[in-house]
Image 1 (cartoon, rainbow, N blue to C red):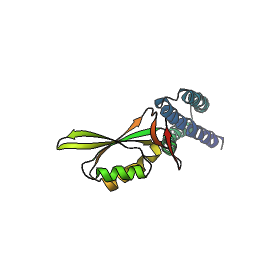
Image 2: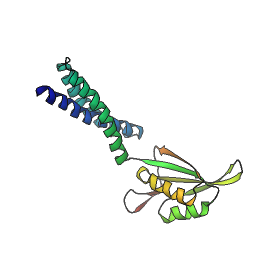
Image 3: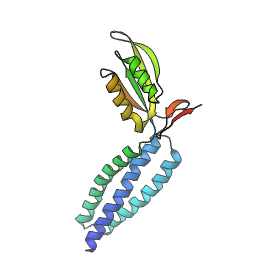
Image 4: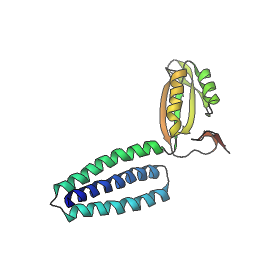
Length: 178
């Protein structure tokens, strides 16, 4: 019974430190140094407790399996938490041949800031739409693009920092920063 509780303890500790690691990396990429440092402290603390339990009974394959299974499950949990948390903004760039005016109008009606630049493609002039949105809103914007301009060429990339302009909030009301 003690062996089972020890293995369960190791597994649960890994379910804590691995998601902390995932979120810490996201915060580092987003430039959130202080948050990343605090997360790193707790991640290391939990990891040390978990690994010391493995080494306390190095002859137990059950502990090693619990450590590995906790790592795998913690990875999945960390990715789920990160997707739910979805910090930061993304830039959605759409090159639209047909339906650009309707798409721009609809996006603006829905509260999204859209900048239109004229570019030149293989077949001539094309409007290029730039939309910066909170990451949580990206799927909604992509759905609107698919509905209004199903043949648009779309790319999505992370934004390190966005200052000024019209950025919709993740809540109900749009935010205009100056």
